[in-house]
Length: 390
Image 1 (cartoon, helix red, strand yellow):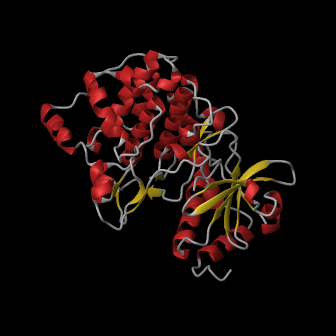
Image 2: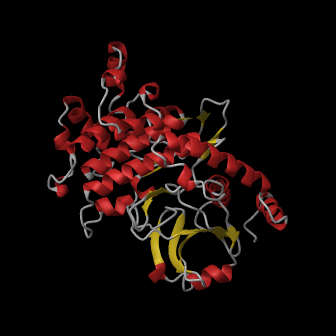
Image 3: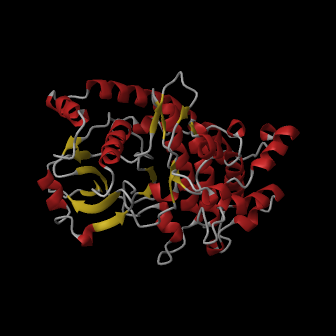
């Protein structure tokens, strides 16, 4: 492979030759044990998932070439700036999605994102996190995932050719995505910050169970660290937390902010950024402050919603998208808010001084469009990607 210049893949080969992932498996077991504890606290989502440590295999290029019918354009289900995703059927009949990192990307970036995705998703196991089945490093870089027959949340919300997504499914997606994020933040020994939570990166299985995908921008956050400081800024316009966009600060609250925008997207059916470059957050903020929640709801639902659930999700979203990360809840708290019957507004009330500062910070999204910088941000993509978002 002429394009591989680093020793990273040679190390990967040596691990594979030894026939084991001892360190990775031990860490996986710790993740599963922690998730079992956390899952019990969040409605029993942990025990049923701690069935086995995650494993993945090396596929030959011939296997994935045959599975995708030679990477036929008829099998192409998604394409972005750095990857293409193909539907494939393995020799045993299993339907998979093959994520191919395209050569137009800078070689170092391709290798980095490939290794990052293996290093994070390769040893996590949760029903709301996309499962890595395997990799291929012959004739390119490939990641193999289970196929998600219902596409992404973005395609279900914004594709005019599909039926409106029912409220019951939207609520299920919100809860499941929150459980997946809570697991990434708290369920593993090393905290994982996704950094690109958005509707096109939340995939849906045959039962509309959501699965968080695309870990190319993910970062480990060691226990003793409060945050990362990262440059350049990478992510998707409309979902970027102000402290990340302005100062490159990354921690769990970065994902919490993006999840808040995602909740507003589920409630309203609107895109995170409209055709006039106005953010969903800016549009929703006055309605949230006035308590006019009914005006947030997607008109395509025709009023067929559970109003209590809508109010809880809207309240959770209003906390997640606060400009000050200090006043945003953790994902465990977000889950409690969405699942509980009562809304405790007093608990989350901000001091008057903090409220005034918060109001000054609103509208920072305009900077995302006006700044002439080298930040690696992108507009949201809404292709019908069926796994491993591009």
